[in-house]
Length: 90
Image (cartoon, rainbow, N blue to C red; front, side, top):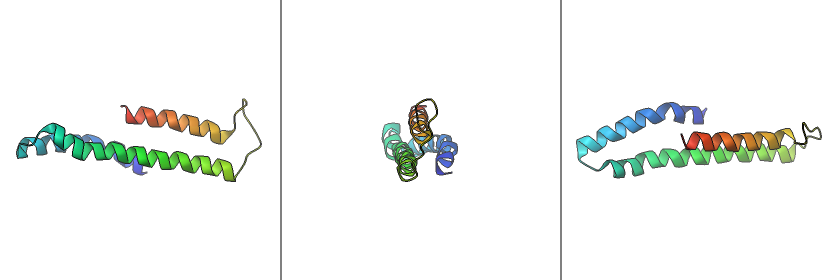
């Protein structure tokens, strides 16, 4: 839910940061680094916690059934890692 909120709020934050930079006369680089950079780090931290939770569930609830030589938790971890990279570099 939090990741979805970040994805929805990000365009509004970018527009607001540009307007703040124009009104205050501060460079857009400074505003972007201080405001928007924090959102990127928050998304990275949130996604990391999600992937660690999936891995922890896989360790604690060991499933013996494999599909195409990979366990479901490992598949979700790899898929989640790829999706996280895609979200960060959009």
